[in-house]
Length: 340
Image (tube, rainbow, N blue to C red; front, top):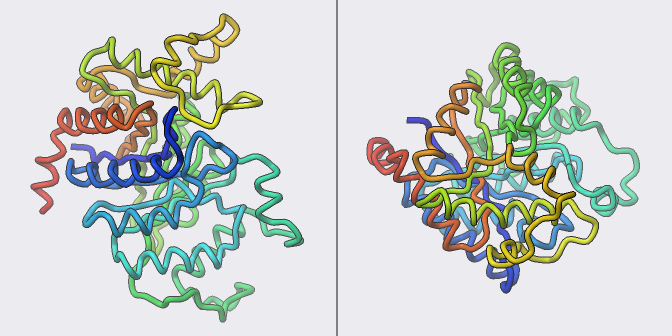
């Protein structure tokens, strides 16, 4: 049975506030652990007021402390915003306190330019993303190679385990970086649901070079999933996701995730319908058995080792119910018991 993971955005539901959103993420992580999910990742979004997840490593520390077994990770750290040395030390702290439970997912920044400017103001010339990735790997492995400009520098705490490294992306460039550095690869199908991804993942596998992090290639495919007991209910829930995606891509998005009632009342314009139709390619919507069958087909197409579902729907009760129904469809509890 293919392992399932969760990537949570900490959505701020209409009528609630960001503190509640973060507490709901905590409850979702606890439930995911009980249900047998393998990993629970949190996102990094800046200047998006409808989601509360802006600082993955701080939220990860809270989630790792609130759970016992499930792997906790970032999906992901947007490396161009930061110093690779600082990221390495943050994740070494996490790994030291929660050994062999921490995933470090890294990616380029899709954020607003002003976010990156605010993060790096007055820092002068910044290294390329490729250089930052190499720096991060050096600091996490204590590589003493003298050809590195910081070869004498050690990231502390110095520990004997390493976070599991995942390179996130949608294109050939990120896949090449993952393959070259010997890390796992997470393909963001939820932003790039096209057949070209199959070849991108295949190239990653062909070009993979074993490393201290990983001996053979490992792939997860990440996709929005809207799961409900009936097709009709799933479609109603999906309408709110349709609207949220329209909102976050607009000039003045509201500071909340629209409710199902709001989505139903507002509807979409004829001009918006094409975008909604295109966005539906990024998600799987339906009953547990339909979503399960689609996930299995996706896993086979991409030869994925794991699947990461993003239950980014309105209402914590719908998010909870969705991951419960999917866990039951995949019989995750049986897999969990078998591993224990």
